[in-house]
Length: 120
Image 1 (tube, rainbow, N blue to C red):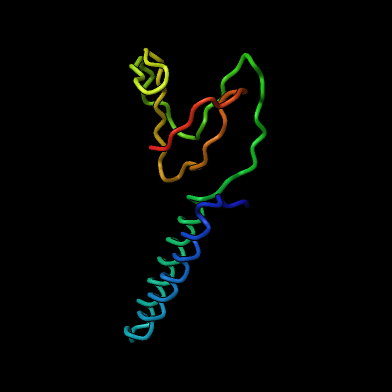
Image 2: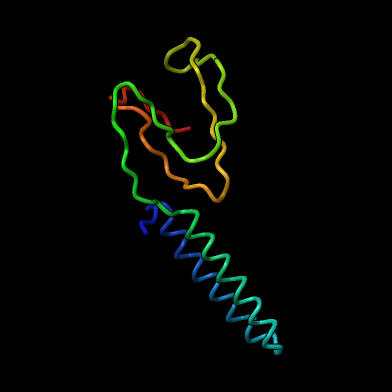
């Protein structure tokens, strides 16, 4: 499974934090079954962190007549909005809700050239 490059540092830091906390709890708590439950919870938490940053292989259908979704999730709003920064007129906005279980990677929805980009 491929991991999103922005998530690699977070996964590495999370692994050290979870391992350190579990080691400390193992040293502080004398009841081993409680430590076992905490270790299991730590493994599940670490698994969810890895699951969040996964990037499954995709085969995009590049067709000039189709627009694919730029992300996984559920479309919650399709509405006309005024875009004041570049087009300075009305455009159709598609809002997609992504739960923590969805793949958090962004894909190119259409074939073309990027003329304007600004990070907000």
